[in-house]
Length: 171
Image (cartoon, rainbow, N blue to C red):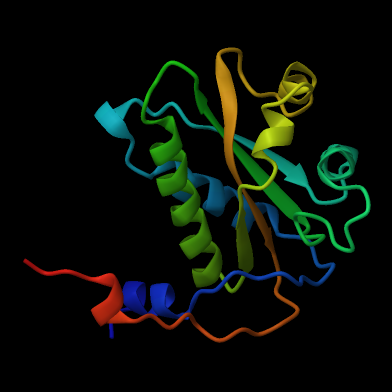
């Protein structure tokens, strides 16, 4: 099996991390993986905001999302990347999804774990959008699309299984 397919087949969503920070080198590699993602018409409109897990903005988002939750939306990962895209470009959601998948697979290939996060969209694009845009340095005319938590996994998880016959039609 080639390395790319192996990485895809072995990756999983991680919801428990060690306190060890993600190195600056690995962080840069992950950002570059996201930037290398294709975008519609090569627009390259996705903006990346990189936030350390212990940054107060993550706790504030958690409080606005669900202050009584037993775990944070980012499972206390040491790094969270927020991806935003142009409001007027109809493909920004898709482009952000492609970029976050590149980051997700790159994290696995570096021995890191990650979790793609969409649950904060209503908070970041809601009543406090302008405030969060400022705090997350989201450019004017952009909105949050998707996030990803990244860190050193403190758990193991089986790969996903699928039902080819149920989920695939070949004409």
